[in-house]
Length: 125
Image (cartoon, rainbow, N blue to C red):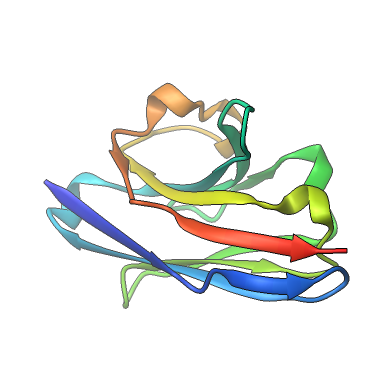
């Protein structure tokens, strides 16, 4: 089993920044790709960004140029740097992990077998 713990969410004004962190523990040898999803009230969960062990990244069009996903393999941690935040970025952000071979663009929600509890991000206008 793999445990994922997110941190770094909170309340920020539009135009501000937040950095989310997700620390993985447990059977980390069984994962190599990680990602961030988000779910706003009344909406489906959607991909925000994903990164493979080889460093291949994929972003939702709505966050390209504003968000950056990165990972520190030594710390088993993935980060999501969020800049120029907008009210529509308000959601619960979930960290996810998978064992996946291929480019990050082929990762889908069903690829991820492990999920964190989520962290709330609220952007005020």
